Image 1 (spheres, rainbow, N blue to C red):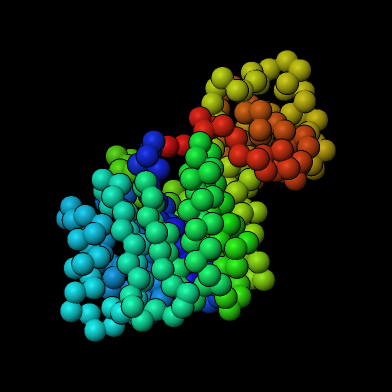
Image 2 (cartoon, one colour):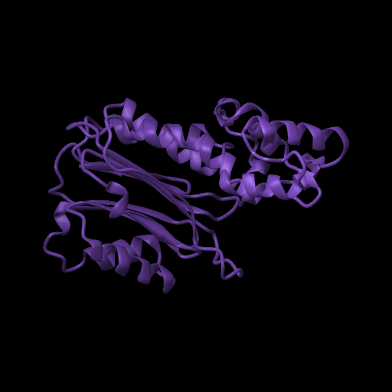
Length: 296
């Protein structure tokens, strides 16, 4: 009743799961992962035990294939279940029980596994694999979303559409205790076009979470200060007789742009949003930015 892709970004080690279904809130129970150890999708007659026990096995160093074997062994309902797994070494496995509702099946490629059940046809998983491989070189999250879009366009879940999700985990646990393992968690829980809804979030995701680079910034001095002051005033922010940098910092934080703040400078995207409004900027980043613009 679901189709998914589980994959690893070979450059950063980031693991991810992208999934869609004619069922509500698919992102709440299908994708599982942990930084450094791996990720998995449990679906069809999904068993949440496969999630936490699967992660425990992956964290213990088990391979994707042996994790599938351990989870399905002695499970009387295993013939009704489906799994996709990527482990700590980037090995993948896809399992489809013999009693999963047709069409059901999966396939594996380099660093990814695609699987689905109750699909329009085998072309759904084939299209997902082709899209994921075809968008090599794009940011990892975009590759996963394009795979979902391809599956949707190939017919997806033959009952229709309802929810979709994309979740990414770090390639290794962060040494910073304030940073969580999850890098991206996009969900559309109940919508007419859920996969397209997830895709529409990508420009906003890039806008909010990319960290500013000083090389791209402008010194917050001279004419730039006046540009910022005028733009703030146009937005109804009192910046006439106040420290522009302090006012800008408050405004940027309110817009979820605090990761782009730089002392004594202004990130070009922050200035663009300030002067043009977020919709204009989002239109320009609808095509994903270069790989180096994304965090590892």
